[in-house]
Length: 252
Image: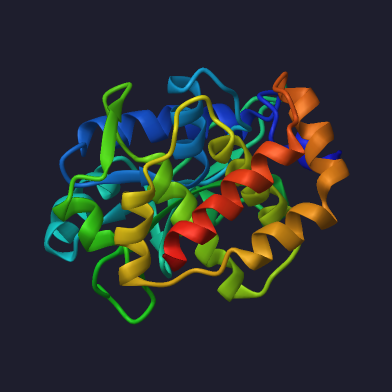
């Protein structure tokens, strides 16, 4: 259950991540669409469900808006490091966090620092270090997002499709377990999913759902325990039904 502890609101970096997600998302609502863990969290709330909070902040954006976005992030003391933006925090005596600038962070041993990561996936590369995603352009073109708490948040179908592509990374561990929780929460949410959105995204980049079923079965006990922690009903049959129904829809 280590993953649950890391993703709990007792972790001070979670609160910082949530606050900065809202601040940046609201101020750049036209330029950024929220994806990933915080998008799952906000969509789950809208759907009357619950999900784990996120550590990192994930957005998608168009290359044409890079200068506007970068200027805003730099003005808010985000430091560009490689493909991501980082804020640095030493812990205070009371267990809280104090935000410091990059120059101050260089005078503190790395093991005494906490980091907040903000990542952006682009429709086209803005540098050799940046990452692109095949769904970004269509997300903006078709407006595949809702406004939640003043932030443009990707539709559940978009979040799921992006997480379905994760299998290509061929990794296992806590990060993918968190992705599995997010997939489960959105797949069994009270609101029916729009399979036409999945088909649109699938036409841009195909994803394989077999790994989702396999990974679900391998970690069913863990997932059931997370569901209990979140106070939501764990329904094995409903989840597998939705995934199999989606598979049939994509193959039709």
